[in-house]
Length: 219
Image (cartoon, rainbow, N blue to C red; front, top):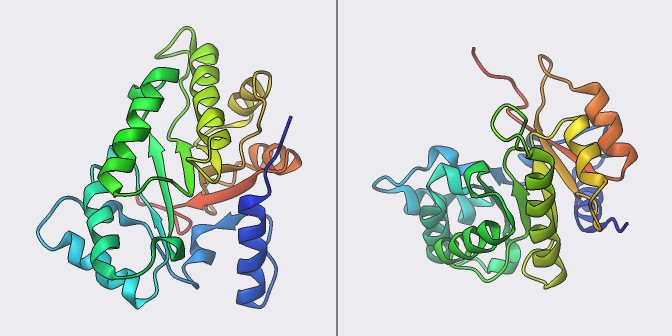
């Protein structure tokens, strides 16, 4: 089993730039200090591409989007309008649960690249795991989907691969079939949701745990 250090190196460099160390969890709020934007609010709306472009020119360099957000075209246009080199921008996008399965992932990845106007993705994630409640064969579906990400990574189309919202038992199941371990598990992580067991398991396997909504949500 291989574990890439792409994201680990990135976060170590981040820690140096921030004058500290990456703690137990590498949260997106830490990335905010360098320039990280989660563009899920930048839906396809008038001015969205200009807002994205201005954010990038201002210094925001990590764009986290997803097929489900339906704003990849806006983000891609914002990158083009910004005048900033693609190599200076870190793009994360995600495959939605309805697009899981090997061949579906290959198609949805190609569509995401087309919408974003790029031929590679820095970090590609499975947005949510399949679970028994919606897929009796969930372990096989997750494994087939992951094999597609492994092939995209091996082909150089993706610089790092990972998962989002996977808990310990989802990760354990995936590892039973994986040739390359997930490099990132992106979780809702804040004082109300710490997922300690999942965090410990992921980090023991060399994964970076990235937090979304690190300041919490109202619900």
